[in-house]
Image (cartoon, rainbow, N blue to C red; front, side):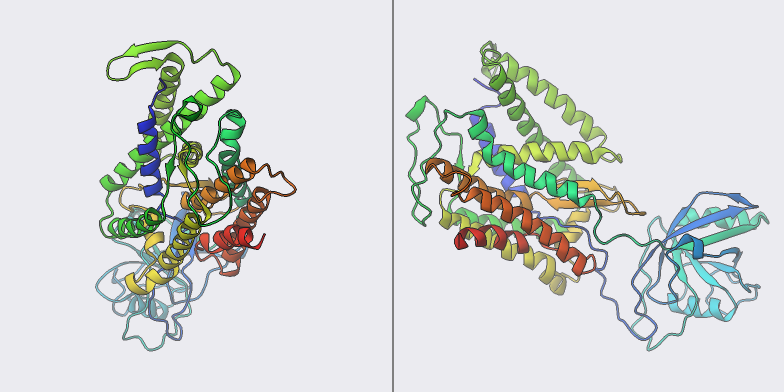
Amino acid sequence: MSLPPFTCRLLAAAAALYLIGLLCVGADTKDVTAPKIPGCSNEFQMVKVENWVNGENGETFTAMTAQFGTMLPSDKDKAVKLPVALTTPLDSCSNLTSKLSWSIALSVRGECAFTVKAQVAQAGGAAALVLINDKEELDEMVCGEKDTSLNVSIPILMITTSSGDALKKSIMQNKKVELLLYAPKSPIVDYAVVFLWLMSVGTVFVASVWSHVTSPKKNDEQYDELSPKKSSNVDATKGGAEEETLDISAMGAVIFVISASTFLVLLFFFMSSWFILILTIFFVIGGMQGMHNINVTLITRRCSKCGQKNLKLPLLGNTSILSLVVLLFCFVVAILWFMNRKTSHAWAGQDIFGICMMINVLQVARLPNIRVATILLCCAFFYDIFWVFISPLIFKQSVMIAVARGSKDTGESIPMLLRIPRLSDPWGGYNMIGFGDILFPGLLICFIFRFDKENNKGVSNGYFPWLMFGYGLGLFLTYLGLYVMNGHGQPALLYLVPCTLGILFIS
């Protein structure tokens, strides 16, 4: 008996399939729909704020520009270092008595509108206005509904409470404070997406050929034809082993997409740290299960006698010693990742667990025929489009993107995605792809591989190579769409479904 048993594999696969309803795409920072009027139509920019106190270079702060005012240079060499002065009054809601000529005005949030503060600072001769927020976040400064037009010709930006307090303290101690403001631009598409593309395509390919490579003598289910008819079932006792599979029915495919939508809305309205923590625990269990199965399979493939020694344990019965040792190793790795999941290098462990879990799911969950595949992928196609493009019209922001970002308070985020650092982005961040964008097309491609194998089709006359090409092309088009749409989050299945299911019908 192996550990975990077959029942656990089915439960893990079912739970994983449910969780992949969170088809997370790259984050899009353009969610707010604020009124745009003449002089108030800027895109929000992230700003680097370098500061000097009495000539000594200090910590670099992060700020964000307003929807109004002039834009800052993106090149550091074109930025000008200017002195900083506190405004009097400090809230900048009335005419200033402090001298601000060619200085950066430092003010606090509150008492009046952002636009009023900007106009007062500009009238006082300030070269720029830096507002100190009342919390450790950067809020978007937008125009009010009563504003009809604005003529603000200085940069307006916001910094966090801690950054502002540090500057204010130095100024009140009569120290000379200078700031250098510039807004380096993030590349729309980072070259690290090549590695993300390779991980995604590689996961689908490995999952498709896994059972054939590791168990070449094992009989798959019969796939007599690519038709809507229900495929023939393999007798449970045939070949002396039970087929460890979970067939997805047509009704199950529809119910899954509906329940995933419901779950997504619940997450959107009731997002909390403990809710995300529960999902993270499910992810760890699924990843540990997948890593265990992959390692045991690879070891027994190389050493057939390694898994023959058993140990009788309470509740578990006869258990392979090899399986138990591997499970212990996976458990230790899972605990280490869970404890360090908020660190900068946690993405590597998350990707390893995610890939292992998806390979395991694609071995257990199967599409029985092309009819069910068409229903599932078409439902997922419209699901992805609705929650990325249409949901902002109903909920005022993209529900899927909001859920993908996770909780701002604790820094917790949903781990059901592959991610890799943006290597060429001065602001850091991650390139991401949701598990659903790999698993939904992966179910179809795994089905086609088994069909080709059963019907003795090779590379030249089989469907599998074409679908692998289509999946890679679909991912490429996803990132091309990201570039064309100026970085707005793209529903990957919008491109992946036509490039896989469409190619299948054409071929």
